[in-house]
Image (cartoon, rainbow, N blue to C red; front, side):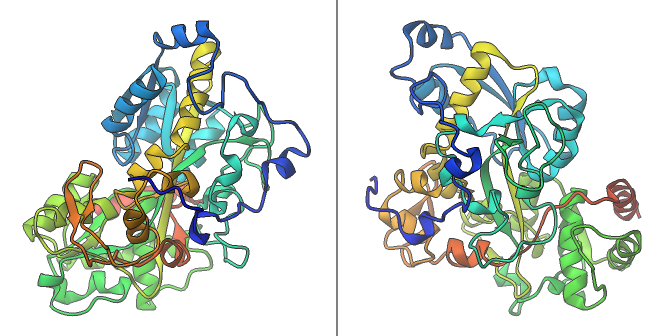
Length: 437
């Protein structure tokens, strides 16, 4: 069922920087093969040759989805080969094997490490059909004009470069983007309400001795350190100047607290992959941990109670996007832009929303969701009917309410983003010492 109503307020957030303003009057490309949003209407030779194109995409398992590759083949005619790796492997491959991929599906904190290496090409916003509709948090850093900019590697700080051939991040929006945003979320702790035995309201609950041997933390340094900082700050043990860009002293204090907790037996495990987190929680080995929204849904799909618990200190956010390898040119480059425009045209956005993530362009995603789905996932309303996964399985029964409420409630309470700090090398070394302790 498709909702063709006028998008609600939550679906029509203005970026605050229009394409016309950004380009200072430069006419957007119209009627060209690239950026039209549909393969129909292209020159015949382009449509014939595109069938022979194969684009190689890699990234984390969060968004490298077989369903997307299948739909690309159906809608656009070319082949998308996907490889899913963990975040550390993605970062290393992006820099050290730049000829091994055409599309990089990466998070913004990874982009901060990768783009200065000169292995990816800035993308021309004139070729992005729905640029004006991208959620403004990726353009200005603010969800609404009144919003505060969260600490950490906020996407807008690494989202633009100074020029066509630049690798230097711009301090304000330009015509050239590093990544075209696609997916993001506000993360919190996952809990087993049937096993924790009391209400959970704060990040500091992760280190409550009552959960000794039953807690887990995400073992990706640039993400895990932010969860750790949220915990230490909530405990009142560390007062950060900017937890998204810690000093060496702040890093040391944070990881000493986590190391002491580890030595005391607080943590059952440290996970790196989606499946690991699901298995730990569904088995009951862990009852409180760093978690991702779809992992919570996966536990629930097994008939096991699991809650993505809103916390009083707010959420840790992350966001990702699609980038283009520097070597790509000609027909393959045209196909890459077409793919990115297709990605923002709605089908994928709805697919991501149904997994508990958020789409970078809400307007188009809404057009591919039923009113009942939109009300549940985006407006925080009780489900008027059973809520189905993208594969058609029941995720939530009628009457259920999404953990954390509406899009505005969740993304409006972001306290920090996953971060790459000035002292990143020092932080990673100290993090690895903590894990090995």
